[in-house]
Image (cartoon, rainbow, N blue to C red; front, side, top):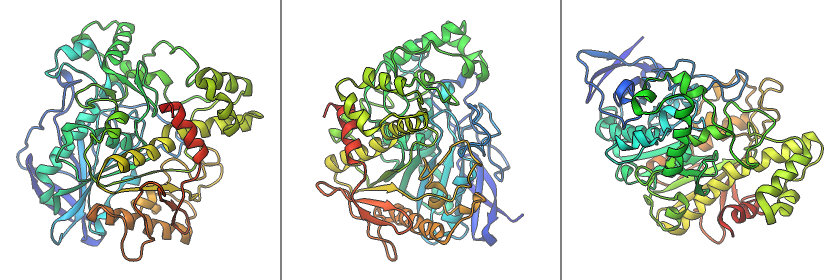
Amino acid sequence: MHHATRRVDGGTLVGRRLAGGAVVAFLGIPYAAPPVGPLRWRPPQPPEPWTGERDATRFAPNAPQYELHPDSLYAGGHERQSEDCLYLNVWAPAEPEGDLPVLVWLHFGAFQYGGASVPLYDGSHLARAGLVVVTLNHRLGRLGFLAHPALSRESASGTSGNYGLMDQVAALEWVQRNIAEFGGDPGNVTFGGVSAGSSAVNLLLTSEMTRGLLHRAVGMSGAQLGPVGASGRLGDGLQDLESAERSGEILAASLGAHDADALRALTPEQLMGAALPPPPGPTWRVDSGMPISRNVFDTSYPIVDDHVVPGDPYERYEAGRFHDVPLMTGSAADERAGMPYLSDPALFEADARAELGDLADRFLELFPPGDEAATRLSSQRANGDRIFIWQNWTWARLHAAAGRAPTFHYHWLHHPPVPAGRYVEHDAGAFHSAELPYLFRNLAVRDWPWREEDRHLSEVLSGQLLRFCATGDPNGPGLPEWPVFAAPERHTMLLCAEPRAGAMPRQAELALWDRFFRGR
């Protein structure tokens, strides 16, 4: 193995050379102290420096998390787990010429699972093209987002929760201090992510904590623009601090933990395995099963704490109270893959009428029940729309209307050649996060029967990302024209075998969700 060394503020790192020596990779770099013992549920603290050389040739463990079905499209790459998880990875050209753009990338996983060691995020191919790529682990689930009055009382901010978001801020701060050592420009950092990672970007663009730490944003299939209230629903709603603290008290009482010390004495397994009482109402009643229950999000999801997340995200974007940087965002056509569902048509209609009220008739026209298979498909499509497609479409609209930096919106239509019968997500189509291997030029990670059209689309999308990171504009020589997203046309880049700009599909469904979420 050919080694490479770099000096960061903690000490000397020994990484490895890849791609015939053209790229260097440094893995498992500590960007904060281990959040264990007394540092559990505290803001990230600086890492301890080391003497001598530190091995940086192996990924660090990911955060403790829920296990996915081993045959899921989203499984793999996060088998090693530890509460000591605050590490990042860097891929860069071995001999950089000038200051290079930087991409800091956040993984998917509903803030409950995943990690930077998932092979889809390997940054070596983008680094070979002239980008410095950073991926990171952060705290997940109840270890990353639990709020409780006892934790708030001991905090200087008087708040608790959102530790996983604070970890991401600490990683961005590490990048500012150290990325020049790898040839990166600390003044040109793109903050991007997919699914939960995209939602985190959406939230942290409204936070004072990230001012000056990022200069462009990429969000794929995830934002948090639903209502703020008493219950945090996956993707389409957040809790406020008071409600999240109350949920934390319920959880702690169920575990016999009545103060911060008792909470910190619990194992990750005890925290993750504890069930909350079922929430009232029909929302998220499902018969499909999920790796995590719906109401777990009330104790393990970002919250509006008026500290890290300074207010209702929709209202802040609407008022222009966000970091006005170029934005590239969008979603996939078949976000239904992996979505919870109801397959009983009578139950589906009853829940729709209970939740949507006067909008139920229109909802049932757009998402009609039928036999079990048809009802399941409508249920999945509805959840995919409300959790992802509406969210990123609305993020683009608000960003374009209130900001000055350009907005670029895409819609992924392409069906990767997923082998039939291999995965539990049936009929995946243009599935949630399908863009990842194309974006990172990592088609070889999947042993699928890739076609020339897949390789072409990978070159286009990754080329657009490289241009956006470098300039704030995804357009460039040899790439299809991607118009700025602006009213009234609101052009969308339709990513398919022959990418082109056009009108966003599903306008009737988007209008329904507008009325549901915002009363419009």
